[in-house]
Image 1 (cartoon, rainbow, N blue to C red):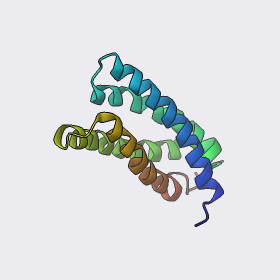
Image 2 (cartoon, rainbow, N blue to C red):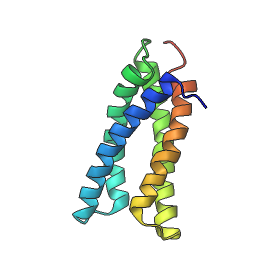
Image 3 (tube, rainbow, N blue to C red):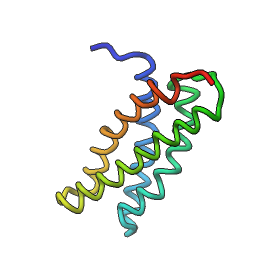
Length: 126
């Protein structure tokens, strides 16, 4: 299976941003903040950084700004709800450690977001 250059750039941006925010997550939960609260704080910050990075680097989008931003926020809003819901389900209901739950979410939600960004957010030239 050959991975496209675009997918590789998406993965590279994703690894960098997720690794950074995962380390911040571990630090904040290590100081005693609840995992769901930390995800709730970090997710919006990460999505803004990711929008700029994915627009410029991953998808090399040269269209308008407002349309993709609105679509991005819609997709990320759904990703946010999915991420929080999965954290609650996996940690509270299934008893999985929150660190593993977050790692799982990074891959699942990240993959779904790539597909949405490729075929919806950055596919139309505004």
